[in-house]
Length: 460
Image (tube, rainbow, N blue to C red; front, side):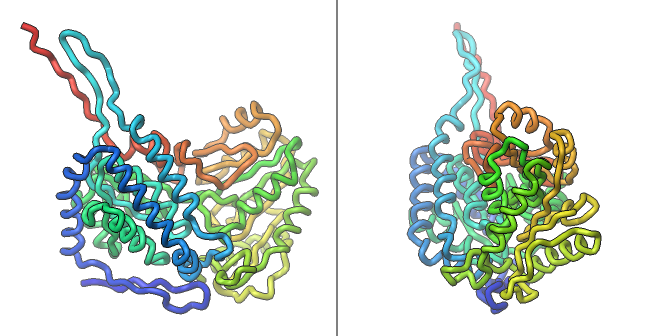
């Protein structure tokens, strides 16, 4: 029996879109079509697959004027920021550029007796479960390289961004990618789990909550289906005494507050050397007080509502608990704060790691700032987390940043920047952030399997 998926707009709480989930039989039929289509897709020349994928990307770009307000309606990002096509295109383009070398055979050796090499062959059917916070960019991280590598793709998007998968599929089909090669599906949780458990897919890539990632791994248990997960973070920033404080505060506060704080690699806690702490805090408060909270369709709005009122409630609860434990709030409640999805961005000091706001993922516009006196203290605090996605270090000394970075339990180390995904680097994490790696040459390695050839020649 199908269920109705409903996207509630954070703008006003109205229903923006609904879709019916596939029945169990229709879901398995979709997966079967993807499997049947895979061999012919993989048999196409690599250059042809690249061209078709990039044509699909371009078609998404042609829809951008419609996509930007649609995203505002679905998840609240202000239209002034222009959507995600820049990053969407950058990531796909890079993966297209490196595909030939990344997927090339590994030559082990050939002589008069033997020819030996390792091929990278596609898994088969790749199941992509994408989140709502950056719905186009997170999806393309896997969709583009999976298709380029010769896999077929089944995409399931978050209910909060219900229309994104439809738009992507329509764009890629219009560009010439066969419908069975790239499918968008609407599924309930039970059907999703059964598909995975019954080996309908050869690889699963999930971006979302820790609980969601655990559900994917439980469904795949015993099937030997590969599962890649990226489950968010509690990313720290560390501002050293020699940092450019103005640049640090502008970047880190933007990293904490952009997209209403709803970034898996957003900055959620900041440690500042005591010698520059006061200057950093004053500038941070000034920046946040200047934000304009409001309707994301308004061009003047700089921070929109959170995607759902229940997400905002979790942030409010973390802030309230911290204040009860002695934290200090520096931002007065904005007039536009409605107690629901529209939430005042907040800076907290006098915080400690006994507070949930410094331990649990907030995924909202709040950041705690702590004073530190040494690298050792900062490192210990940065590692005192169940998550490990990125860390942002601010110093003029590259060697010092490398030495500190070597001691941090994280997937990416930034120096003098934050909250950015470089497609040339592996997007990965550790601890409760999950396992696996997307983009870069490693992304291709994870979306293919090695197949060895040991060919003995007949010599006489």
